[in-house]
Amino acid sequence: MQDLSQIIAQAQSAFAEAQTPAALEDAKAKFLGKTGSITVLMKGLSKLTPQEKREMGQALGGAKRAIEQALEARREELANEKLAARLAAEALDVTLPGRKYPQGGVHPVVMTQMRIEEIFRSIGFDVADGPEIETDWYSFTALNNPPNHPARSMQDTFYVDMKDETGKLLPLRPHTSPMQVRYARTHTPPIKVLAPGRTYRVDSDATHSPMFHQVEGLWIDTDVSFSDLKGVYTDFLRQFFETDELKVRFRPSYFPFTEPSVEVDMMFTSGPKKGRWLEISGAGEVHPNVVRNYGLDPERYIGFAFGSGLERLTMLRYGIDDLRLFFEGDLRFLKQFNR
Image (tube, rainbow, N blue to C red; front, side, top):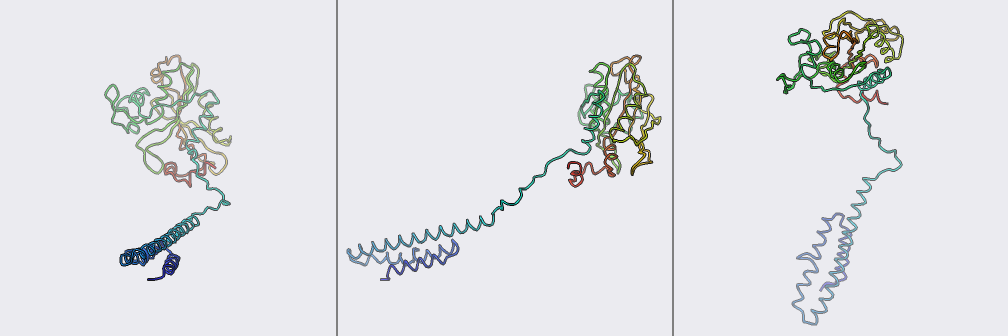
C-alpha cells in the first residue's frame, strides 16, 4: 500500500501550485474525490483483517484530516490574495485633495429680479407675487382690455383646460399686470408695489420666448404725477446699471391700461454699447377705468405703472447677446454668474 506521508506531501504540493479556486478543487479531487488516492485506499479496507482494518483506518483518517487542513489553508490563502488584489485596485490616495461637488447657483435672470426688488424696496415699494394661471377678468377686462379689443391679439394666447366661475377658460397670464389689480383691491392707498414673475405669450423667435419674466411697478396716491414716473424710473436705471452715463427718453405710445402711455428708451453715453437707443419698458399714468377696477375713485387717486422684461435688462447688464442662453441650462454659461 502507498506510503500515506507521501500522499500527504503530494497533496500539499498540488494545493500549493493551484493559483485559482477552480484549480484547487481539481487538485482536491485527485486525493479526496470519488477516485482519489485516499478514497481508493479506504475502499480497500474491506479486504483487511479486523486488526489491520483498525490500524489502517486510523492512519487513513489522520491522512485525510491532514489533506483537508492543507486544502482549507490554501483556500484561505487564495481568498486573502483575491482580497488583497481588490484592495490594491481600489486603494485611495489619502494625500490627494478631496473631490469638490458642484454647487448650485442663482440664475442670472433671478439675480436681476433680486437686484430690482432691492432697489425698489429701498424707496418703499412692497414686493408681491400672484398666480400664473389667471382669470380673464384680471388678465384683460380689469386692465381696460374688454373682449374683442384689438390690444388682446398678441396676449390672448395660452389657456389651460380649467374654467372660472363664469365658465371662461383660464389663461396663463400674459403679463404681471393682474397683480396691480389684485394688490390694489386688498390694500389702501398709498400703494407702492412691485410684482415680478413668469409670463406667457405666443412669441417664439430669435429674440423672444413663449415664457419670459416681467416686473410690474405701481404707485397710486392722491398726487402721483408723470414727473414722478420719470424720476423713479430714471433713477432705477442708473442704480441698476450702476452708472450715470446714460440717457432716458419717454416716447408716446398706447396701452389700454394707461393714459397717457409711453415707451421708455435708454442709451448709454459711454462704453461698448454707447450711442444706441434701446427700448426698455412700457409705462404711463394708470387709466381711470383701471383705477376704478382697483376699487378706488379715479377722481381722487392717480398714479403710474410700468412693465419691464427681466431678460432684456439682464442681457444689457451682463452683455449677453442671445436670449436662448437663459433657457438651455448650459453650465458653461450659468457658472459665470456664480463665482
